[in-house]
Image 1: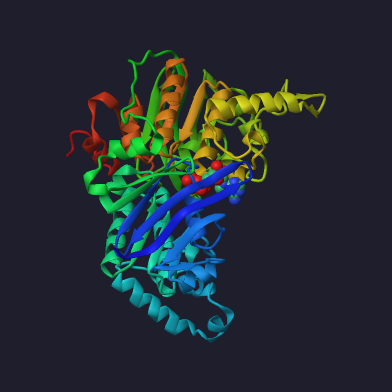
Image 2: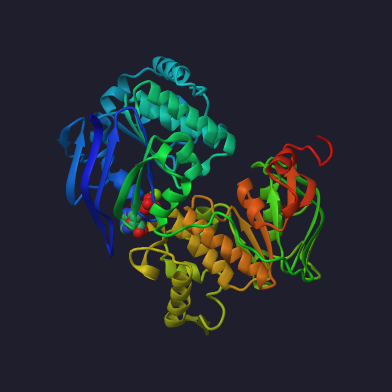
Length: 506
Ligand SMILES: Nc1ncnc2c1ncn2[C@@H]1O[C@H](COP(=O)(O)OP(=O)(O)O)[C@@H](O)[C@H]1O
Ligand SMILES: [Mg+2]
């Protein structure tokens, strides 16, 4: 059997945690190999060692049969290993070509002429069906295109082992389909791929084999065709996972949120949300379904006070809050799980403890006469961290940046729910999370509803909206297409509505 890459009995520790404990991964030439594990299981750490960003403390790495020490990403490049990171490393105001040649060694860089580089990039782009314009600026192209630039960067450096760290987390369903096609093209040309993902559906669609790690330990490797999604989920989480959200019938109470004829401008100064009307009552979850960029951001930012309203009103618990400040809305009991957890959810350089009190630290009992009571902060934060199973090396003392994305997200959700809000606005709450965490978070949202709170769920995952919501409002081009009851509709109908086709029109 010829393996292009073997990582054998790998160990890596971080302060307070063994991130990889005797982990083994063997990549066959020409396969797509999925690396599956919960948030914080140690997947990025393992791949970081293959790409030369960290050094293992024990174990052996072999590339094409030969034992190697991958002491830096440059060494990885020379060995033919490339990686697309979870957060892209592109310069916004540079062109595609400039970005691709940027990382080359100075000697090569100085002698490269842009034109011939662009030509080579164009050829690569064509032969793998990437459709990238070498002269576009990064800031002008979509996230999906930016990812392709990262792929081209690897190909330009002649990588034949390609690592993708959660590539689909930032993509739309259509872009995900395209990416899987691209990966299959790459395999045809003799490349070998490791892809990290939590999404079992994607593993089924793309991968040949799948290796699972759980809490830093190697669980096993399976043939994807012969293994069900449920079996893989169980390997990953260590218990049976339910994909269906269990909920009792909704017990509706009074109206908490009433949105009346709301119009809001987008960043381009035209109306991104138009004449939008919707209400949310106590005891229900209302989902907003739509393709990305169809008014969801404008709606959420208007509701939370981050963006001014052109016309219309927002009524909350009977009061007009259209012009109320962000701070006051929070104090009145509107909680927000933001779409961008790095920009709006956490202060990455603070520890988790301080992040858990970001919105309440000025209040009693956390502050008194301008002094912070550390003990109260610690207790409050630890309670959230335990209840919401936020895993990190040093608990509340861990710096937010060091946590995996999913654990950061669990922290934010815990903080928002702990504030006991009347209205919870959850935007993409399970983006990037593994099935175990998704199940957990969906339960917490349903619990809010059963406790008589109002929940507004904005999600690009149609499955999630259908599964979790009681009612679904569909948006297209900034307008409300219609509202349907979740138990009287299906993926087809909502999908058509997302494309702007109303009930009865198709
Ligand atoms: N640079 C780092 N410093 C400290 N701890 C880290 C660092 N990188 C990862 N960790 C910790 O190691 C564990 C594994 O993280 P990671 O490999 O990112 O998980 P995954 O990619 O599977 O979500 C987590 O508990 C994480 O908090
Ligand atoms: Mg990771």
